Amino acid sequence: MATTVDVMWAYIDRAMLLYKDRKLTPEEAAKVKFWATEREWELLDLGVQLHGGYGYMLEYPIARAWTDARVHRIYGGTNEVMREIVARQVTGRK
Ligand SMILES: Cc1cc2nc3c(=O)[nH]c(=O)nc-3n(C[C@H](O)[C@H](O)[C@H](O)COP(=O)(O)OP(=O)(O)OC[C@H]3O[C@@H](n4cnc5c(N)ncnc54)[C@H](O)[C@@H]3O)c2cc1C
Image (tube, rainbow, N blue to C red):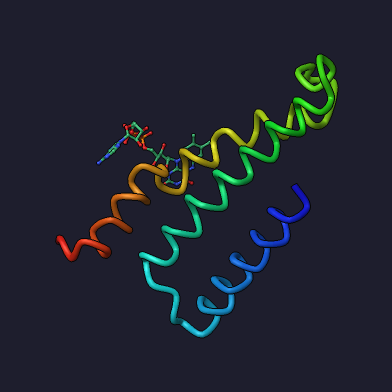
């Protein structure tokens, strides 16, 4: 989990630097959005599992973080649509 967080930060930081320099393309942004939110979901799911039954109870912060994170794969453009943006670039299709 720690390794995934490290890699995720490096990837997000790179995108932020590109954005700052006005070089972040829609395709690169789409890659970061779907990839980071899916890693986030996996990490929080592991966190819930780690806490056992307590991890599922909304009294515990991990349960609320897990619930909140679910929408990250939906809003800001769904991850399916982000993948389509990337796929169009990779295949050269408009
Ligand atoms: C809490 C919250 C806050 C939001 N805030 C904002 C905001 O501030 N500004 C704003 O503009 N919008 C906002 N939204 C809207 C959000 O961006 C949309 O919900 C999101 O883009 C998905 O659109 P939709 O809900 O119409 O789902 P739909 O487009 O109906 O998609 C339904 C499902 O079909 C899939 N799907 C759709 N098209 C394709 C395709 N071509 N290929 C494969 N799968 C596909 C989707 O991935 C999804 O799983 C917010 C949504 C939520 C839940």
